[in-house]
Length: 447
Image (cartoon, rainbow, N blue to C red; front, top):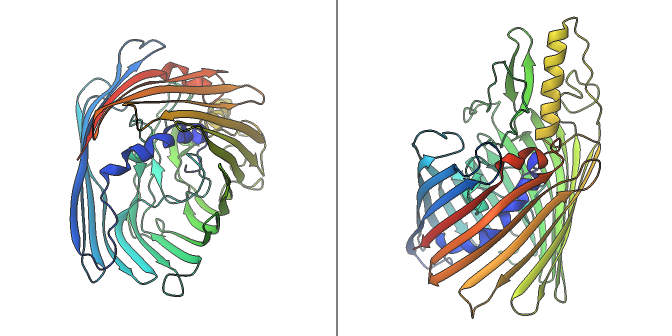
C-alpha cells in the first residue's frame, strides 16, 4: 500500500485479488523474440449499500474496458500502452447522474538489455513485499472512490523514468534501481460522513500537480539482493505525500488540502521456510510538517514508522492462509494546540485537526493492527472463495470483514459476489465508514 493512513486498513483489503487479474495484462516477452501482444478485459461492477440512510440503493454501477498493447523488437526496444474507459450509471463521486472517464493508465517506451532495463513514460511503479500494506510503496497512489475488488484497478501512476541495472550481465544477485517521477499521483480517500466541520467551504481533493515543475518531482532508489529462498532490499525516497491533509485558511475560514514534501527510508525482505513464506517490510516517513517544532505540529500527520510482519502457508491442496501484524509508531505525536484570539477559528482548526487524525489514522502514538485471510481455490472446481479480516485493537477497536465467492463457468470469464462490512468504534477510521458497508457483484472477461 502505499503507506495508508485511514487506509492502512483499506489498502490491504483489495490487494488479495490482484493475481486473479494478471492474465489480462500483456506478457513480458524475452529478449530477442520480437513480438506484439494485444489483450484486455471488460467488466461490470455493481455495489449496493448495506447500512445507513442509503441502505438498499446503488453506490456504484459501472461498465469498464481495458486495452493493453505491448510490443518488443529483437533489439530490446519496446512500447506499452494500457487504455482504460469507465462508464458510470452511479459512482461515489457522481451519485445522482451518469459520468464517464477515459485515461491512459500506462504508456511508456522501454529498453531491455543484458542486465539493464529502462522505462520512460506514464507508468505504475509499486514497491514492497507485504500484501496490501506496503510502507515502501513510495511512488503510486490509489483511488478509493473507484469501487472494485481488484487493487490494480485503483492504482495510479505518473510520468517517470525507471532504470534498473543488474551487474555481471544480469547474473548478479544484486540489482540497483533508480526512479525519477515528474509529478506525484494523489490518493483519493473515502471521507467519513461528518468528519469535516459543517457549514464551511471544503476542497475535498488537491489540485493535480503540474509535471516537470521543481515542486512536482520525486526521486527514489533501491538496492535489492535476491536468492532462491530469500531476498531483501533497502530503499530511499524524496518527494511528496500522496495522501491529502487538510488545513484551515484563517482569512477565508475555508478548508483546503495540502500534500507536504516528504522523505523516507525503508526496506523489505521475504524468506521461504518449508511451506511457510515470511515477509517483512518497514519504512520511516518524514513529512516536512511532521516534527514537533513545526507550526502545524499536532494539526497534520507527524513523522511515522510503519512496519508489517506476515506469514503465509498452504493448508492442504486447495486452501491458503495468511496472517499479518501491522504497527505504526508516530515519532512526534502530540495533541493539537490552538492559541489564536478567535474562538471560532480555534474551534474550526481543532475540528479539522481531528478530521486529519481520523482520516489518516493517527489518533494515538502507537497503532497496532492485524490482518487475516483464508482462501480456497482448486483446479478441480469452478468455485473459489476467501474471507478477509482486518482490525485495530487498542483504545477503540474497529474492523472490516470481507467475504467473497467466485465462479468461473468458462475460461477467462468470472463472476464474483462479496461484501465489505465495516464496524466497531464509530470514532475510529474503519468504524467511521460503517455506513459505506456494501455488497457487490462483478462480472469480468479477459481476452
